[in-house]
Image (tube, rainbow, N blue to C red):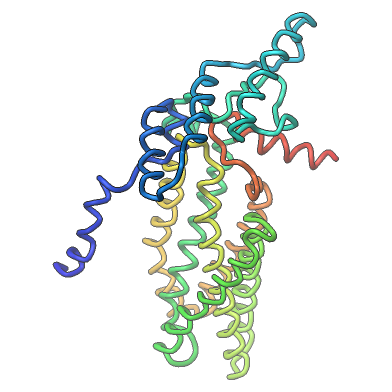
Length: 332
């Protein structure tokens, strides 16, 4: 225990080495800290930051603007607000941080990257879009934790050598990471996670059916191979949701949202040892549970927004735009 503790002792120095995220500092109006952060990074990398500081000044000045786009106002008011909106967009264009104008919705506040928004964990439960998204994400993490650790703990009840099964359960994670690297940007986070969960669900259910119906060595070997394929799928899904989950939360809820999702997974990990106990009595039982839940998550994931190629949300309004864009696509 002492050795394990000393190995991580160097992390104590991170308090003075690591900096807060510039995006988080910007979202909370701490522009002086952002300036110092940029200067330190430029000094470390020996880069010229004169242009960046000019852009930062523009963003700082723009933080005082509150441009409201509302088509229901009178013509005179609309023209005045449209003029202000164009001025703000011109300033933000220089820093390259404004959202495409087609994504700005009537009645929303267009204060990209500069709106100061104080949020807490209670805001997750106050806003419908965030809450529904969080509930699905928590279910996904719960199923992933239960299935991932459950498959490891049930390897001793599988056909064949217990130690070899445990080893192969770990080896199949390697190709899943390569598959993840190939698909994550090509097809997107959402599609990649759906594919991985579908593989896990179908393979684990098929493995359970083979164990239930057949007693031959061939059937048992095939069931074992399908179980490893299910482990391949759930491992790739775990890698995907670690990237996907922070991207669906606004800046000031990102760490909280990730922490709650991880909490759901740890609760499932505490339950997972009972899967091994179930496997000793009903060999095909864990496969039915894990496979069914993975298929359920595959369906639920279709309700989540795609985040690939999109700017990280800074405010709650930005999160709503994910769903507005999705609804437009569905109507078209």
